[in-house]
Length: 346
Image (cartoon, rainbow, N blue to C red; front, side, top):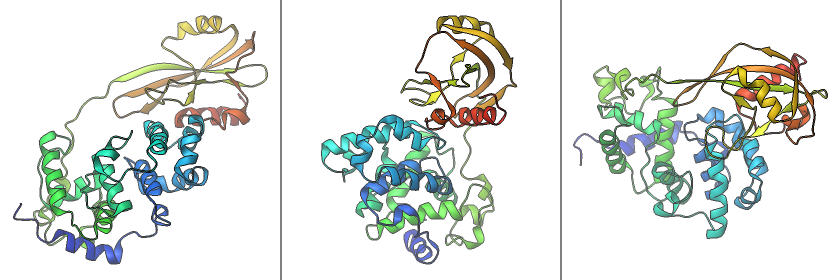
C-alpha cells in the first residue's frame, strides 16, 4: 500500500454529494442495460456529445431484445456521426449473446468476454449497475491519478498502466462504490480537465502533488510523438440522369465497417475502368479540392471526383436523396453529400 493515498475516497465522495452529476440520462430509470449502453458510448467520447445520441438510441432500442433483433444497418444508422463504429457492431453482437445468456452478466470475467467490453468498462458496469466494487481506469481516472499522485510516464506504457490499475484498486471503496465510480469520472470530466483544470475548486487540492509542485500541465505525460502516415484516395461521387448517387456498403471489418460510403479508387486514371467494370458510361467529371479526415493511426486525404454517368443497367447501389439520408454514412461522407445536394449536384 502506498503511504500517500490519504482518505481519497472520503474527500471525493464529500465533493460528489454536493457537486457530482446526478441528472445524466442513463442515471434515470437506471438498469444494467442502460448503464451498459452509456458506458460503450462514453468510450473515448465526451458526455455532451453522447447525450443526444444516447437518447435517440434508447428511443429506438429500449431494451436488449430490440437491439439484438434489429438489422445492423439500423444500429449503425443510429450511431452515425458518433465515431469508432466498431462499438456499434460490438454492441449488436453482444446484445445477441446476452439474449442467449438470459441477462447481462454480473461478473468481471463474463462481462469482458462480451464484444467491446474491456476491464475498465466492465468495472464501471459492475459498479454503476450492480453496486459491486471494481476499479476503473478510463482517461478521466488516469488524468486524476497521475496528477494527484505525480505518476511519471505515459499512461499507455504497460508499467505505468499497471501502477495506475493497482492504485485505482487500492483507492476504490467497498461501500458507495457506484457513487465513487461516478465521482472520479465526474472529477476528471468537470474539474481535472485536460486543459484549464479548475484546481481551486478541486477537493484534492491540498493533497495533489501536481498542484502543490505547480506541475499540473506535466501530467499525464503525453505519448511520445509519432508522425501519422497519409493515405491518399479518390472518392467517386456519381450522379445518374435521375440525380441519384451511387453508394456501397463497406465490409464489416475495417474503417467505417458496415457503413455506406462512396466508391474509392487509388488513381484518377482508374475512373473509366471502374465505370466500365460497373457498366456505366462516363459523360462528365469534375475534381474537387483535397480534404483530410484523421483517424487515430493515419490521415485520410481524399479527393472527391464528381462524375455524371449514363446508367446502362439497373443497380441497387443508386440512392435518391431520401434514401441516402436514411443510410448510416461516415460523417465526412454525409457532410460531402449534403453540401453537393445544396449545390444542386445531387
